[in-house]
Image 1 (spheres, helix red, strand yellow):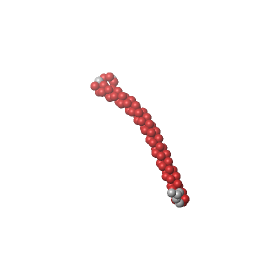
Image 2 (spheres, rainbow, N blue to C red):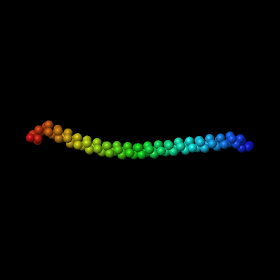
Image 3 (cartoon, one colour):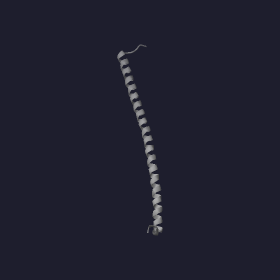
Image 4 (cartoon, rainbow, N blue to C red):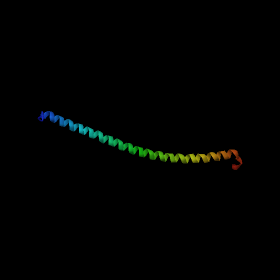
Length: 80
């Protein structure tokens, strides 16, 4: 079996390289997207943890204020 028509072989080689380049570009972009998502997840988790801590502090302060208001309404003489 011979090599076939050199033009057809050239076209096949060119198409193969174009396919490889396309696959390489897709792979690179998928990796970039994956890296972005990992960074986004880490940043988001960090920000949510920080926000959760702030909310916990605010909840504790609110509980203290509720106790103080409750105490003031049941015993107004404390403020006179």
